[in-house]
Image 1: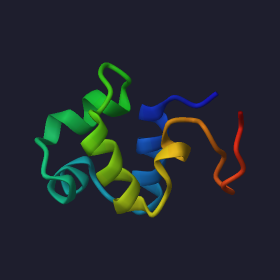
Image 2 (image 1 turned 90 degrees about the vertical axis):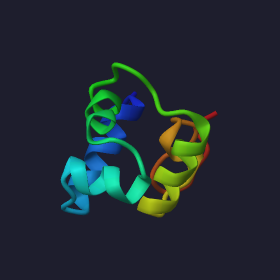
Image 3 (image 1 turned 180 degrees about the vertical axis):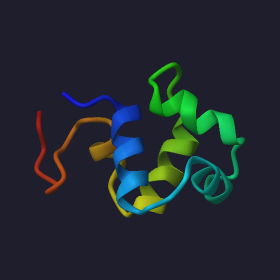
Image 4 (image 1 turned 60 degrees about the vertical axis):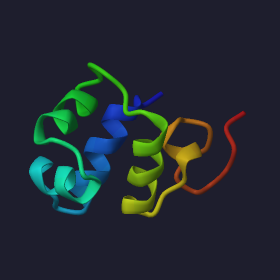
Length: 74
């Protein structure tokens, strides 16, 4: 199963955004994106919500509860 950081990185790359560009959109420091993408630390709930809104995906997708089609995995 893909980890949250890997999903964030893939979504960011799919939108051709740099880490600093994503950080600016989310209102976080540049380094925090790298920390998330490398699974060093996970974003708090409010950031997960904003990441989902930014990439037009569900929080359930980001958290591994559904696949990219919206089908529940559990």
